[in-house]
Amino acid sequence: MRVQGGQNLYGFTVGILMLDTQFPRIVGDMGNALTFDFPVRYHRVVGASPDLVVRKSARDLVPHFIEGARFLEREGVRAISTNCGFLSKFQREMVAAVKIPVFTSSLMLVPLVHRMLAPGRAVGILTVDASSLTPEHFTGAGIGPDIPTAVAGLEGEKEFTRVLLDDLLTLDVEAAREEHVRVARRLVREHPEVGAIVLECTNMPPYRADVQRATGLPVFDIVTLVSMVHDALIHGLPPLPMA
Image (cartoon, rainbow, N blue to C red; front, side):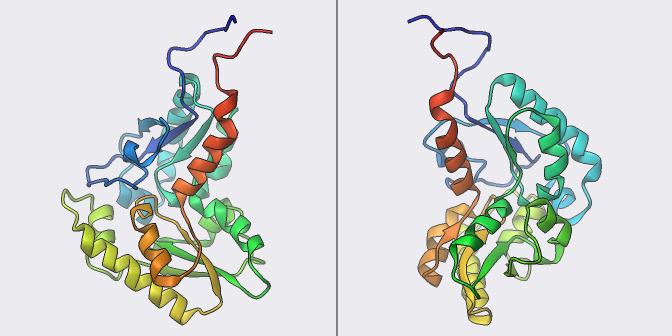
């Protein structure tokens, strides 16, 4: 069998554009490579702080994210994701900048999850900061007014959001776990119509099983989406046999 080369690196399906951070990333976090049972290619977007991307406009960073996406494309990845669900509002710009699929946020799962639910049911969204999640983010993710949602954020808690958005060096994992469970339970108690939950934040997947146990509901996140895209790509990676 003869195969054709042309790249420097091989075997990557998904490239991930990382925020510029220093906070701890435990296994399950999108930014910990041990989260995945396949290789991913990371690229840090210098200057993209969590506070800037989540709480502020971050529009000045779009050219830097596009530059990073084009770099990953040249490196041979076959799809690109990002390390913050709030970047969904730049989905249109990002996907237009490269020739490979781009999925900026787990929020893009919401329309799919909604179609799985019975009439009258809503999709719950757990987010790092509900006060910063806007209709612009929903529009970028394809969440229209016909899709009922209920949003709950962890910004009122003491540990998870503070550590992430202030980019601190120490995280109390058990405290963060308790916060996820508490907020998820409150979400379903206040919104009994919720039939499934999507975790917006890419740092929330380590607590997905805890949210499932606490609510008894299906829970989806960015790792769900990365794994799905990987499965869609893995058997078409180069080097391929020459015709």
